Structures are given as structure tokens and as C-alpha cells.
Length: 510
Image 1 (cartoon, rainbow, N blue to C red):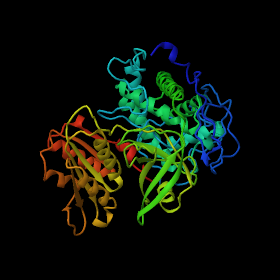
Image 2 (image 1 turned 180 degrees about the vertical axis):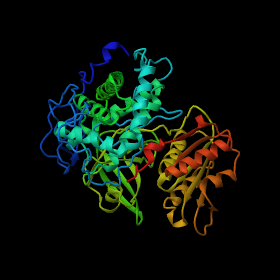
Image 3 (image 1 turned 135 degrees about the vertical axis):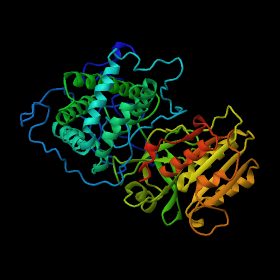
Image 4 (image 1 turned 90 degrees about the vertical axis):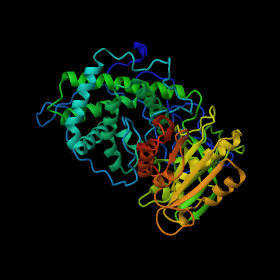
């Protein structure tokens, strides 16, 4: 990273991208934006509310003395407890969340790969963090001391951050969902994640690149970043009297300046070849069980993705609320995309998709993400564990192997609570009949079954050996944790175990 990339403290650098305008009606459903524009229309043809973009939100970091006389930064006449509505569906887990949206970008993990045109930090590629000042290690220590001090009062700090943001910059409130309780919970965890990754510059650079690209769908602009940084520093200064100092403030300013610049650059670069979002019309809605639906959509533009990846999805019923869903098939010649959706308690998006969506409705899709893809350069066998609707990306992986025509063993363990919950078993057994290299075993945790009984990881131990296989896991976070522990215990090295980030999975299907 050249010094020119680093912007002055908490001020936005110019970028080629300026956000995407809302689409206009075309061919029976809205077309996704293909080119940047500054103005947004006043209404959206699908019923989405318009998201106006503020033209002048630039506010340099300024100190506002606490009226209580503490000498720390604070807004005037702002309660430290913002009265947000409760949203049980927004617990998306820890992410570096210095942003204007509730949805995290994809987080890298061991062996991660970029499959959406992102700027991966690989061998020979210089990280954007390589040119941080020599004091970067000292900065990391100062930042972590701040985080340690706010940990016991993280709720107050995050509430105060949003109070600052919305009072000083009310234009930004419309970029957020109506209910934000879980959004507040995520901010502190996001900062912890950033602190942990501060000494892993390539990983952090890759993560922020994906995050910046993903923010395009929210209408996030370079002008918004100073407001976020200003509010962040104001909240930290108020609640860290033991560790806050001029040196600490300078460390946070340096870190946030680089972080925001990486995200701004990533968004501008991504804008050159991808829309901010895709509009997709629902062409089929099949209810498999009372609470599970298979939803098939037709994007209005070609949608590039790989089997095993996922996307973020927004419905017209809950604007600005995005949820992650895995693709339930490999790329198809007709361009259609399918998702398996389970309605969960307090799940706004999942309940809407299962119980209210019908053919003809239009939803939005973000960019594809995720590294749980097949390495077709090897002939290693695939060991796949899918629990519940986690069978969707496993099915996509099987189809992907079939399309590439290479004879490699694929062993699928399909877990559910009861036989009734094996909603896609017929599809999987059909694939097993068609491909002699495929084996499918159902595993039922509760009740009688003609398949295997018990917990999915325990069932895997009964077979094998698996030490030469590449493992893929998809399902609830608990399954991923126990599955990874089991697979490591039976000899599969960590770099051959692939799954979506646990942080992404927490609450992602709501």
C-alpha cells in the first residue's frame, strides 16, 4: 500500500464508486444497477423504500466536550441508552462492523478462497497493512487495552455509539433496519475480532476487502465513513477513562483511517465489474414441510457463483435486513438459483420467505461469498456433513463434482432430528443412484429410523478412514463446532476442513 492510499484522519478519500441507484422496471421485474449514480428515485418499483444518499455528510473528527465536565468526547443532551426496538433476528455474530449496515461480509478462515472477484492477499501480493507505521504494534496494544476496559460495559458503549451517530448524522438512520438491538450487540464483538486480527495483516486486508465490496448493496458511500469513525471514537473516549489518552486516540485514528480506506478502495474496484445487488424474481415456491420451502429465483443479470458458496438476501417485507443463504445447486444452464429456507421463531426474513413469498415476488441478492468450494485440481475424496437445511450446499457440491466428470469418492452424512425432517432425502438418494462414486447416509438424532441413529459427528466416526479426504460441513453452528472437533480427532488436518465462518452462521438464517 502506498502512502497515498491512507487518507487524512477520519476523512474520506475520493473513490471511483459513488453508490448505486435504485433500478427501474425492466422485462417484468426490476433490473439491478449496472453503473453508479448519485441520485436515488423517490420510490422503488418493487415496494422497497427509497434510500436517499446524503451528498455532504463529511464531518471531520471533532471533540465535543462532555457537558458533565469529564473532558471526554460526548454529544450534548444524548442519552447513553438508545431506545432501539428488539430484533431477535439480527444476531449475526462477531465481525469487524465499522459500517452502516446490519449484515457482515464474509469472514476469511483457514484455507479461504475468494470467488467473487475480490482482491485476495496471496503469495507475492502486498497487504494494504504492510505500510503501517512502525508504531503499529504499539497501536495494537493500545487498542486492545481500550477493548479490555469496555468489555464489562459493552452494551452501554455500543448504545452510545449509535446515539452519537444518529444525533450527529440523522441522515444515516435510514440506512439501518428499524430494529437494532442485536446490531448493537455485534459491534463490540466486531472490535474484538479486529483486535485479534491486527497482527495478521493479510487476513485482515482480505476480510476488509470483502466487507467493503459487500457494503455497496446498502448504498454506503465514502462520505459515511468519517461519521462512523467520529462516533466510534466519541463512544470509546467516554467509557475508557482508564486507558484513553492522546496516544490511544491517535492509534484508533490511524487504524480506522487505514481500515476505511481499504473498504472504500475495495468498493470502488468492485463497482467496475459487478452491480451493487441483483434483482431476482421468484419463479417457484415449493413447501417441503410446514416450515421449510425451496425457493427458486431468476436473477435479472447473469449471477456468477460457485457451488458451496452463499449469498446475502433481502426481501421487500423487511427492507435493509439481509440474511445469508447457501445456493442449493451448482450453477445451472438456465441461470436459475435455488435456496432452502427454514422458518425459525422470530425469523423475519425466513418466515416471510416460507409463509408469504409467492411466484412473481422480487427479492434482492448480494454478491456471492464463501470458500466452501471443491478443489477440482485434486482427486481427493469428499466427506460432507450436512445438518438440516445445511444439506443445500452439500447437494450443490455433489452436482458440481458430477458436472466436472471426475471419478472421486463423495461420502455424504445427512443429519436431522427425525425421518420427517429429511426433506431432501429423495433428491440425495436419486443422485446416489445416478453416480456410483456417491454414498448418502441419513443420521437421525431423535426417534426411530431406517438409517443411522445418533449425532452426526458420532456417526462419521463409525466409518472411514477419512484422513485422505477433504471435509465439508454445513449446518447449525453447534454442528460445525462438534463436527470440526470430531474430524480433527480422526486425523483430518485443519486445512482440509471447510465450512462457512461460524460468525456468519449465528442467526444467519433468520
